[in-house]
Length: 144
Image (cartoon, rainbow, N blue to C red):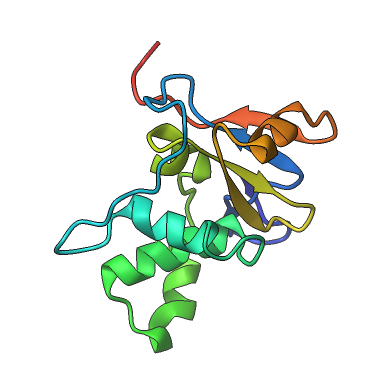
C-alpha cells in the first residue's frame, strides 16, 4: 500500500501485479463464493465486482464500494465518506477472501484495474509465470 503523491490519501492499488492465492488456501480449484440468505458476504461482493467486471475497477474502487454498501452510505455522501475511508491505511486485496479461501488470483493492470483468475486455469498459470509482472500472494489465514 502506498500514499497518493501530494495527498494524505492512502491507496490499496497495485500496478502490473499478480496476487496469487494464499499458501494455505483450502481449495485446489477456484470456487465462486456463495451468498448467504440474509446478506451478501464480503467475498461475494468482491467476486461480483472483480470477476463480473474484469478490468473495470481498481482495488480502491472495489474496497470502497463494498464498504459503502455494507455501511449503507447513501450515494450523495460517498465522496466525503471515501475521503475519510482512505485517510488511513486500509487492508488491500491480499486480505480478500477470494485469494485466501476461494482460490482466485487477482491481476492488476498498468492502470491499477483488477480482474480475477481461477486457480487451476490456464490464465492463472500464465499470469503466475509472467516475469514482467510483480508477484505477491494473498495473506495466509493462519500463522506459519
